[in-house]
Length: 217
Image 1 (cartoon, rainbow, N blue to C red):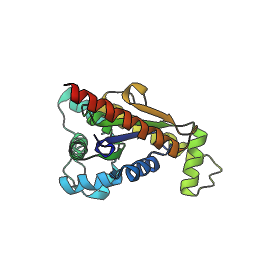
Image 2: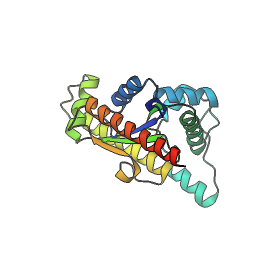
Image 3: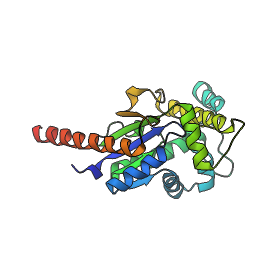
Image 4: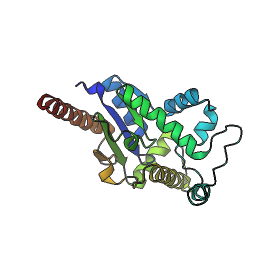
């Protein structure tokens, strides 16, 4: 099994380097990277406007609408001009994610892909985290923000809250809990290049284990 056959999915706290790591791994392995690109695929295949999809990316449907749907059989209203309700949008996205994962080795950031592809033997799930001050510094550098009033920290907390709500809603799991992932890294302690090195080493050992299991069967 080649390292480029693996599907690597990255969950991340805001500001922990998920996108940068994703690009590094995709370049090293010679595979495609999916983040916003994945949204465009969903839009193309499902007839949803890319702008609308981006605005609702990694957001769970309205809690009230979900409760009404579960308890009273009331359907979520379609999003204006789109004809999709919240759960249908999640289903469309999940179907595209699964199709990509089954079709090629790649790197996918977010979208609860670790859960969507949990039964695939070539899927490796990673979670990135770091202390808040480290992530604030990272976001400030990325956005060129001085931010004397703590706006970036609040922005990070809100982004993490949205991701947690989305992940927990879709999977029934707890976002960031170590049992959900094969590997977890504190990116405030080592560089992203070092993280990529360790993931590559893990992939090599995983490929050997899968090949041995296949030979023994």
